[in-house]
Length: 182
Image 1 (cartoon, rainbow, N blue to C red):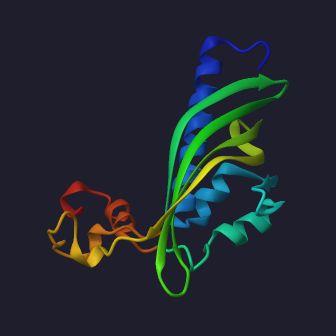
Image 2 (cartoon, rainbow, N blue to C red):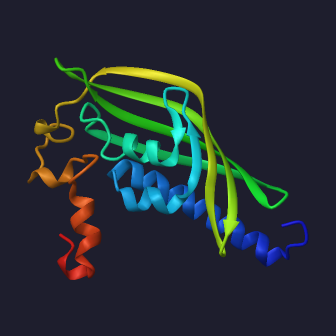
């Protein structure tokens, strides 16, 4: 990257950001192929609550815990710097998790940053190391009852409530054309 053109740098930034976005969606949808596409097979991760190889991480995050039926990662800015033949990236994240405690569901939200080392191999940028930093955490208590809809108005069917696996986004993207996306 040290002698890269402006276009090479711009493309690298775009590809790194697209990788981070695809990974977040894969984690939220528990889609192993999307998660796998973001990491090199020899990658490692350390979330403080879990550390291991990529294969161990994939087995942990997909299918995910049944105790976390809904999760959503909102990504903020990604700061990227060259580091020899790799890139270092810091991406801000706010993550929502609905947690089933066995007696009730609770909503939690955390804010933090992903520290990623990317390597380019065969023209692709993927993560070789990921570390999670936690900046804040909030427990919002008992989850809202979606059976009542939003603001007192019931939903017309259950496709409007999100789930980590099996929600309407799977059908939306699988449909392939806008005429069938209902």
